[in-house]
Amino acid sequence: MLLTCSHLLLASDDVPRIAAFFRDAFGVTATFENDMFVDFVLPSRFRVAFFKPVGASAASFRASADRAAAAFGVTVSDVEATYRTLAGMTHAGIELSGPPKAHPWGETSFLVTDPDGNRWEIAQAPSDDGMLVDR
Image 1 (cartoon, rainbow, N blue to C red):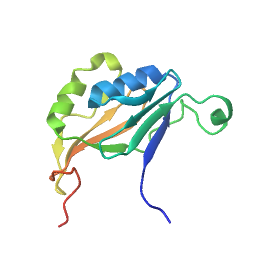
Image 2 (tube, one colour):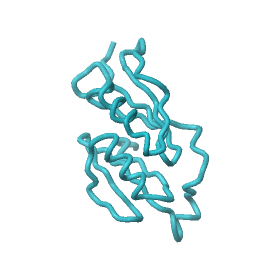
Image 3 (tube, rainbow, N blue to C red):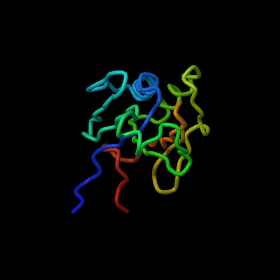
Image 4 (tube, rainbow, N blue to C red):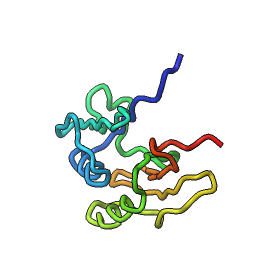
């Protein structure tokens, strides 16, 4: 029986670069970090980790894989401030979809593509815990 979504694991050819992006973009600190693996534990206890595929893991993961089929959603406390932070990170090799947009289901969000090509939906929800409210 599935209990929860607990973590996201993404392959990267440059773990220090993607760790710096994630840390700078979201103001989080890694709980473990070296040149091959970095792990961020978010306040919700959800984990986001990046690793360099080598050895046996290289048979299943490719850091250069096409990432156009998905976007990872994260909720922030202030979507406008996060957008301004990311807009100022031009050195990081990121792309922004445009300023935050309000949606009829209650979220305000925008998209960012990180230096590895991963797409992230950055959202702010209309509740204190960052989750959508029941209608």
